[in-house]
Length: 146
Image (cartoon, rainbow, N blue to C red; front, side, top):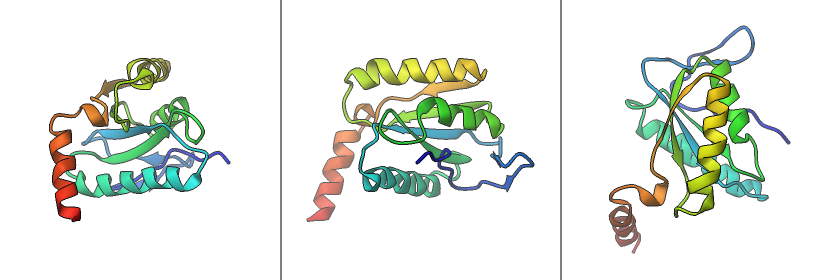
């Protein structure tokens, strides 16, 4: 079951071709997750993107998702949709905990090839587990959960 790129927060209109017009005053954020055969797991990533879109509405015009494998949209499909929606530049947050092969090789290769094909500028952010303050943020969340 193919899906179009999941779109969130502050999307204005659907244009004549059926694509979402994203306001260009703010960049778009693309979360790239691994993907799962379990639709519930992929939906969890989409809900996280929705929550981030609300929390970062003053920073990003939209938050979308793509998956490395096992779920749609793929990275090339999500980037193609960004281009069709008029996005010219976007940030990418690999929604992955460690700097394994997906972070070091797969995401950059797929992402940069797709961005080059559509002449888009992309800024690859550190993966989730590599963000400054990530362990401390997890510790704080754990303390609040008890």
